[in-house]
Length: 266
Image (cartoon, rainbow, N blue to C red; front, side, top):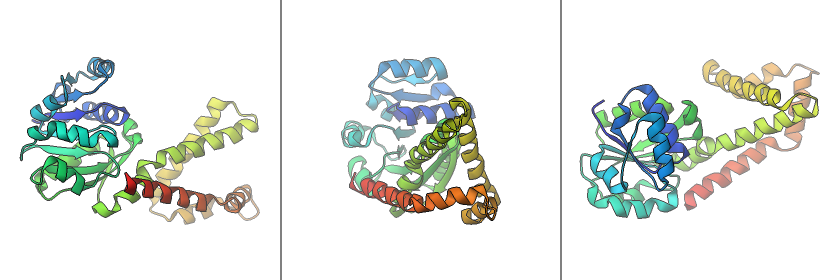
């Protein structure tokens, strides 16, 4: 791929994306140009992946064809103001921040800017991410195809309407945290029953991984798959009854509602 890919910011999400891009061999590692406040992180990434270190954010914006804005949401306005003079009609800017609307991005980068709004998640670190994307009208169809190919290097991709982004933040962007809590709780319960902790984490994590794969591959309703495990008078229905009694579903729904609301306010 004859493109230079830039990352302004090199936190966990950017590192996951860079790792996946390098491993995919879609682009030569030295064609990935990165800026970050921490020089130690840049030196580590250069040593590990062979990426090119930029002196500053403006260098990334000037030299790259596709620029990922991988800083925290509260830094977006400052960074876009810094690089605005480097924005041209042939460059593509990719946002990964929750709460930053296309209207906001276009106001700061220019109405003519090519912008892809995305919401990835941390499983991108193991190439099992889920990323929602929404292009603005300046991005051509062949450019969108290229962007999808790049993002698919670290997981699944869905093109969605922008109005659904707050829901995406709740259902996939933030949800790995809920799943990690669930795995931790299951492991704690297994430890109470005498299982060594490392083994408990493996059993719990594999159960979650396998269950998710069944939903994706069987195309069956999750409720149907749940019923398959719940034998009459058996152990599983006892556990399910307790979860229902303690309000597991309502707690998850309310947590995700709060998460989406926070995204709207950012």
